Length: 165
Image (cartoon, rainbow, N blue to C red):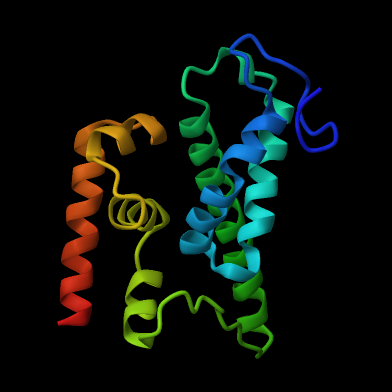
């Protein structure tokens, strides 16, 4: 049985249960999700990512569990953003507004600039600057090419420069 009171499905072929992965990486994934969706929803996003891993039944065939979890977290954040976008559009049509509560950084201009990035750009910026990962390791964890990582990072930097300078 996995760590976390039965979260995992037991030992997988690779020797790491989902529960053990939760115990090992949930804090890192929560920080990552905080950058993607804000502190209010980060825990829910990580839980959704782990729930999707449990439902996928492919955990034992994955070569990089940490990368798989980062991708699952990004996908959960994308789904949440799509849902929030639909909700915001409905509220706007009915005369109310929605406020995003992401205050990880002190400077409101920086927060607004980072919020203006796409989720993939935000993910690459976070992994580069907060987790100090190389483009090669980011590419491996997100299952994209190194060129995609470099391109997204360049676009994010250009947008941030344009907005902040």
